[in-house]
Length: 100
Image (cartoon, rainbow, N blue to C red; front, side, top):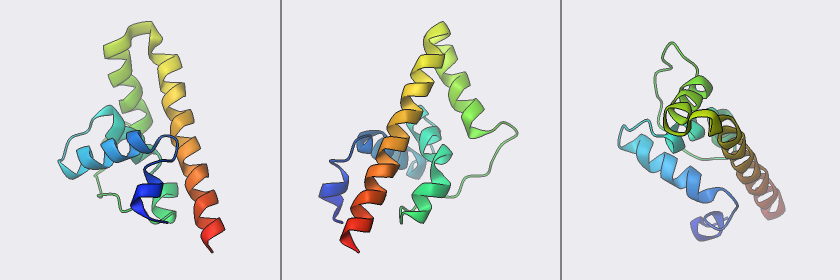
């Protein structure tokens, strides 16, 4: 699967933004989302920079950032981000298995 086709998958924008931020050493919301999905994304062939896991899980860090920015709306937004990540992972799995 080529990079152009990967960029058309649902949620690809978040994953690409997160990867860019990680390469820059920035732990943005998108970067934390990529780190949450990193085990599965790595199995799918995506190279993700290694980041030392701090005391808090990446899930908690993301939620905390969202809560600071969105207040009580953080919960639903967090869930929507996770759904978009899973959509991307599933679509990428389908594309890769179809190419085999």
